[in-house]
Image (cartoon, rainbow, N blue to C red; front, side, top):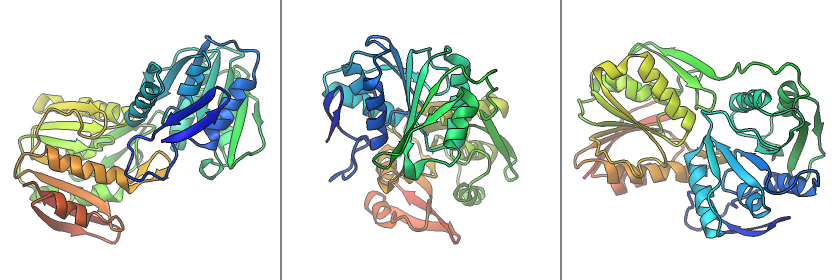
Length: 377
């Protein structure tokens, strides 16, 4: 647990997912700067609507709620939603109202926003806000210096209007803008990206917060090369699916007619859904979508899981995220079921795979990636 001291009180917060002997805090200096700005403004009264964007663990939503504000959380991440829910409960609060990233947020008197990792997603959010917020709405935006793009202030000004760039404090930086100063609002031009896969032939689109949305990443490409030797399967899961390229390739290759697409990102799930619709996969296959924490609460028992797992959680390099997914796979697979996993060579997955699976082999590798096949006991 992390004790977070704010102008609205002290709060014990916990990261989600939390690993044993956790060394990372559930808040950062950017959260503190935003809350200090909120508390210092005497022109907004408590109980008025407050829009909180990209809150990772509740460090913004929970103190603001304790300060009397009516909080709505706008987020893409199911993991963040679970973190906020758990911390709100432990702090004796109700979970804030939630709007997923695939929908437009409600109007609010004030906005607190953490700068997200993906720059196209940040631009998409700013464009959405420019068309949704009433003139005069105060928007406070902050991020850690090491994560901010040199373009951050320019992007805010482009979409929302004249921006005050505050001096950096505690390795973080805050930007303040009054909505409505940009005229007219710029169109949302960054929502959809895409690329084409040659084998099997697929044309894919991705919403703005999807990993490698404008090109096929090297790990997925290497895993796709193994599908011609992959045995058919009745139930397939595309775990950490992104835009759904692995699951859709399995359908196109004739490996299966039933795929469940799983991801913690709402935009990833919506991208996979759009690609299934556009490629008419529903006509020949049964597809389902699971937006949540990996395979938790998934009812299907697959006999094949395809996975290109993340090793980042938000801005943090976090091998624990992928390790959790491996344990989930071992538990979810039918006896004798297979996991096809692609991972960067530097990730130490070999001991974990051998601990949780009956048989493990390397199918193919290159200078950056290894594709593993692991058989469940």
